Amino acid sequence: MQLGLEAGANTMDLAHELGIRGVPIDGGALVAHGVAATLSPLRERGLTVCQIGAFAFNPLSEDRPAAQAAAEQLTEIIELAPKTGCRYVVIGPGNYHPSGFAHYDRRNYAPEAIDTLAEALAAMAALAEQHKVCLCIEPYLKGVVHSAEQFRRLHAAVRSDALRCNIDPTSLYDYHDVLDPQPLIRRTCEGLADHCGLVHIKEITVSEGFHVHMGLAPLREGNTDWSLLLELIAPHVPDDGWVILEHVLSPEQGREDYRIVMDAAGRAGVQLA
Image (cartoon, rainbow, N blue to C red; front, side):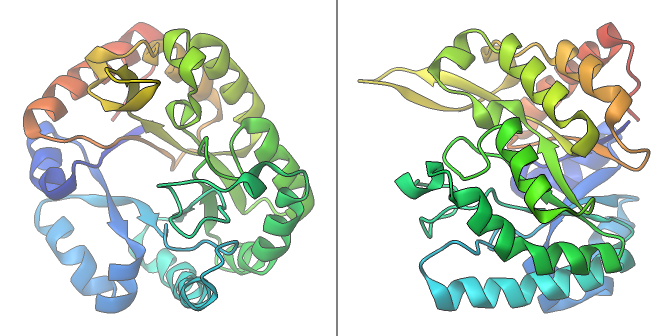
């Protein structure tokens, strides 16, 4: 499997330092600046695109002008993706709240939410098929696609193999999962094995505060068994797929997280290049 890195403003320099080839690009920037200008700084460092983010796309948002603009932008992103050498375009999980990832809406958990999202995604999935692009859902605890089971319902409704789901178990953690992640990791990897998009690695932990406060943390601070995750999902990652170490907040954290991931891969018998 190929290894990618997302570390904010440090992404490209840190990836180059660590010998990691893949870095994500922003789909909005791709549309605004074009393929050549977007890829130029990557090519200068010998890097390649591992993911094209299109997180502004949220067809369930009640901010209809913003949702329409993001849909038009996603159409352009899908059409441009093959020219970048990366076929993985990542979108959010669907959220009636216009924040996308920051907040939630109770309607996200209603039984009909999947059907509504499927209807909104059908045309985009068909366009992705046409351009041989994978439209990858980023599952999230607060969104409509908040479990492997929910994605399978969505896939059955859309009926397109262009629609994939990222393997990102920590985005699904509740309090109990943070303490004992292994059951969720198994359910997620087994439930999404035949729909695997990208694999995302980041850690979520419980922090001090009343009642429950949870958020991002360096890998060493959490309980996730990364070796188990890599062992379970490796047979199902596409040949051109990526394992992406993400939400790295500093070069120091990135170096340590990289060592942890590579050690986990070694224990799992998995090669990350």
